[in-house]
Length: 122
Image (cartoon, rainbow, N blue to C red; front, side, top):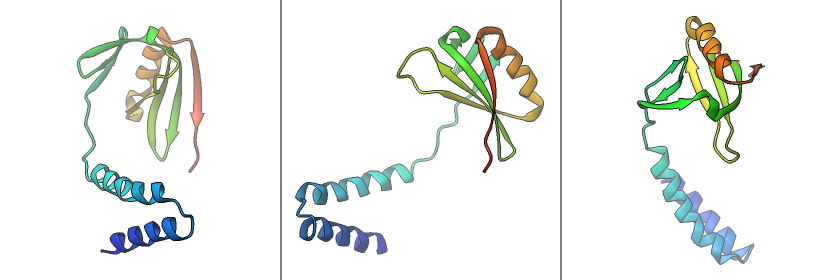
């Protein structure tokens, strides 16, 4: 209920103060999109790292598809960030346990040229 009152208030603000009907129409559309997306459960995708490359949902992605990678340790979680060769492709983040870390880095080093250790503090 509170969300609906805030939405109506923002629509009134957009119409009366800013005189912007387009933004007032877009506000409920954005609210519905936000509501729908916030209720979706995240996908769980199985992956495996091997000397040949990375298997994501049983599809092999060769290490030649990536130009660089970085090791990230953040909030007691370890991950590898792989930067793709293709210009507008998103980076790929793979989470793993500390015990699997050295093996994953060794596999990634075999096919990707640069390794940087990235440390992010909270």
